[in-house]
Length: 135
Image (cartoon, rainbow, N blue to C red; front, side, top):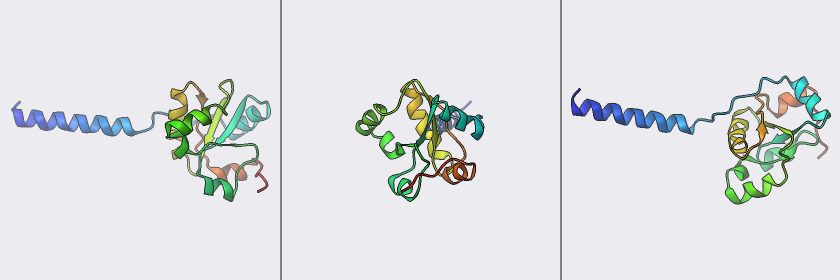
């Protein structure tokens, strides 16, 4: 193999590795929304809303914990939020469409939490019977 081809191949593999490492490792939970409701009702789990403040203020699920992804990404804010999240319960993260929930799950899993990101977003949760909080 000539040197030029080897260098291109090496660079391609490095770039591919960097791209792959930036993708979230978490996967959406296979728990049904009925299972999620049951676990929350039994106090075995909590719902964690990782949307941003303006989204939260427009409406959120009753009893959900507000932990915006932007704060989970900042070390100082993360440490404060971690003190409010129980390690002995399942954390079901949700956002608007499921992507931020995956990123939040990666962060929280590294801190030792049992995190199960939801694919359904806020609107789907409300349609599935989760109670909307009074503003």
